[in-house]
Length: 278
Image (cartoon, rainbow, N blue to C red):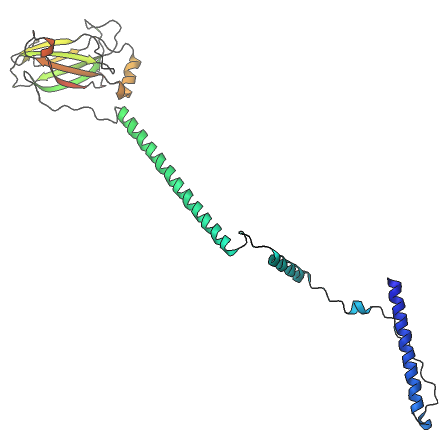
């Protein structure tokens, strides 16, 4: 390839020199003899070798690297088919989708927060209901008036049965109640008392007491009655004190006479036994 270029350059040089020499001889023939310079025509100086070919001279200058990259990227973008990802509408759609996802996430988080809040409230109310410290004790409105008796005060509690007679063997803590008749009570009749456990089962024997002319058979307006059975372990009472679902109850019924049948007794008090201990 290089030898061909050099041969072309040499031919161009020889042709140029020959043309210049012919032109000089023609000029000499046209001039008059007086003007003809007897001096010898200067020998034409050889031209420097042509290093660049015609093709190299007219070759376009390559664009800068950055411009080429820019042209390439533009042509690629021009030739690249429009897809949903590189169209303006797709950008708007993606923005809307991201916004919708954000809204969905906010709604989900809000729903979870409400759910946890509801569970926490339910748990609090559940424990509040079961814990006797959070639930007010059942209150009785005094005086309590029956057909045959008027009660001005009534209290419940638990006590140790040590030294008492008629108590079931092994009972360590038993329920008890204190009943006070009203001062203006002058009636006569009978009371029957039931102590019931958390399953509403009667514990021990039913207790029947009598009153006449406004006084109990002990000659006083106040009397204390106790169950014949109770908790046989102190731990059972502690659990009872903590869990109101285990609460025992006391039920008192009245009748006109001490000889009245069971169907003649009518309830006048039915309440929980306080976890207080004496």
